[in-house]
Image: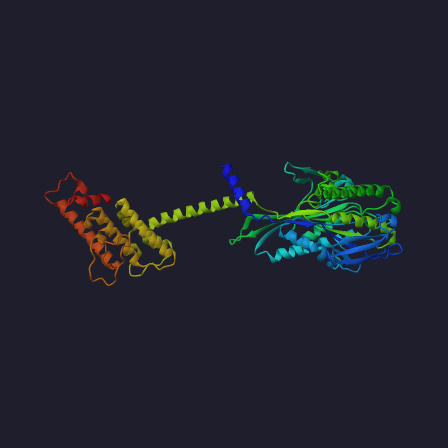
Length: 589
């Protein structure tokens, strides 16, 4: 059994499309505009050039010759997919940097979009946005596009959208969607990272919530953003003191013609990461609490850079191990850095000249990230649990259909022996020429019971055909009853019964050939083509049945009073005083 099951799994897995795309990590740069609260100073000197050969934009900046890596002219070039000027809107940033990753996410590929830069350079503004609707960031726009696509494809696909939001604060993970009230964040339940034997990552104490509408998803985003640790620093009055990871999980299935979702599922996840900003303690003049936070932030960003360098060296064959476990953030973002994921990075830069060193560090980090390559695989698989439930449901439906057919067959058999009772239960009106009480269903049933088994089955089959015709909407006529009576007569003749003494008045009349002066022609039996019963009418059938019944009663009374009658024989012997066939018919009756 298990061998066949595994073979079936392999066949189904081979039938699924395995599409893999190898892509480089896409990097984008964005220069923040000058804000009213910024320190006055000289702007940073840089130029944006176009590289026609590689279809990229290059940031060229002039630095001191000692920092230029040996170049005499003191200039450095940093290529990007696109460089956004301070005047560029949030919509343009989303369309250029995030929309491609979102499309792949909807197709079934994993995705990741993260912002990196020094503190106060506009990372949170890029990812979350501002206070107005037009200044929405990457995360709200991704949610809006996701539910818009879901609404358009609701007739062909089934979607399940799950959301989670966590932060890494001082190298400890916390669930931002957990309602803890005024409890300090240090007392919240910490997220525990574990790994199974297959290498899959599991996060304990992280809640996952299903979002059925865009409003619910935005409420979860704003709740997580409100619970995030924020402090005021000399460089930024609302500085994020933790790394925030907002994760969207999507499960989609094609809808079958019956409306049920398919057992083939595409599952993908999208990490939207707002990293905390790096900063220099001596330049930011941090206090004790913010200084400790800054230490952990710089430490985690240092481990992130180590992982990126290690992944690059591993791809070149110079290294075998990548230290993902050095930091919680790198453990969670393992797939996004050199794994099964489409990743895009937005490097944010401050415009002031006093922060040019931090800007150069950010540009170099982005250049290292642009060297990474990910193997993006379509996450399509068979949901075996759902398939087993679907098969169990189909099995129950088949059992119910089988029982319903058995009842219909049994009911069809009863309709062959009691046609009028069945049609009365179906609500079919009887013709006014003959009253319903003139037809005795018990007598017809007794006549059928006295037939051999093969003849009874033939009568039942014909009765079932008549009943199905009535159920399909065809009008009931006495021609159907005539065919049943003809079937009884033919069956009685085939069994060797005497037509004059067949059991019951209806069977006796059916055995007697009808007169040729009947006005309405009866039906013919469809069971045996060699018998062609004469036309009959319901009135003639009833009249002959009563006449034969009266004649049989007269013959019985004459034999009971005759000289040969033995008083000890009883009424049964007197009634059977004819041929042996008549005795058999009487016993059957």
